[in-house]
Amino acid sequence: MLVEERSVTQVARRLHRTQPAISLQLRRLEEAAGQPLFEHDLRNLRLTHHGETLLPYARTLLRIHDEARARISTDEVEGRVTLGCPDLYAAFLLPEILASFRDAYPRIEVTVRCALSRQLAADMEAGLLDVAIATRMPDVAARNGDATLLKAERLVWLGAEGGDAYRRTPIPLAMLPEGNLYRDHALMTLNEHGSNWRIAGISESIAGLKAIALADSAIIVLAESVRAPGLRRLEAQDGLPRLPTVDLLLWRRRDGLSDAAGQLALHILLHVKQNEASLASTAPV
Image (cartoon, rainbow, N blue to C red; front, side, top):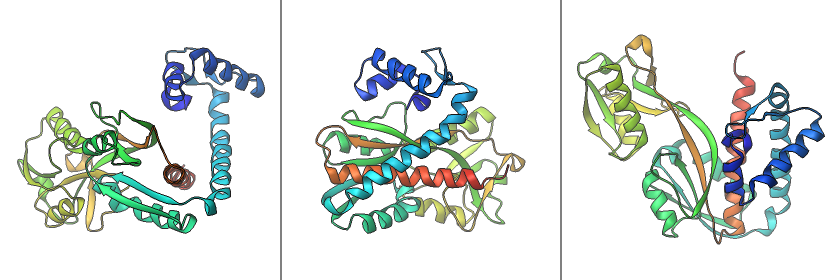
């Protein structure tokens, strides 16, 4: 958590602990390791060389601990959970997660509610959601929920294979409705790049955006990890500027979180982290 937040103050706030308590735990960890693990600037913590070396081992130990705890309680947990998720992630991330969760927890019933992250925040505040997967946005937060970083996702431009929509002037875009971070980043990046663009289509669903792009009527923006057969990534050599990354968050209801909801949240976290570790281990050096 210190690695993610880079701030003792932020970690203390998330864990509902005092700053001295967190600092004491950090000193004890460094004493046990026998080496300094963080550069001691408490306003912006950064790992030392020894900290970077220890980090993957620590993550592996935490993952094994969480897996063991989850497996022990598998047969005992039952109930209903409402999971919120944007359409994008529901399409490519949830199938594997829900299938493996059903195998591990056959007595837990999961209902999925798809909406944009802004609406999911409102739904969680209204008590309609137990757990949610959402995109970090500067003015959107589940005020009665705790947030954990799942992963950072690079955004990419996609167009039809063999298509030429990206060469047209102005560039035709198919976008999600206003209020979506992908849309905001795409338009801001094009404006900063000095590119001329027009909105050629709007869809609330990822399937709709893909259909427009496959017809070569426009180009679209999706997360790098999304599988999109028939579409190809458009890069700088195609005249398009590099897009930023976005953070994918896991929200959990802060009060009254059931055991079933807690297990689903843990399952999502482990699944994403394991996939990230697997991709990292197979990436070319």
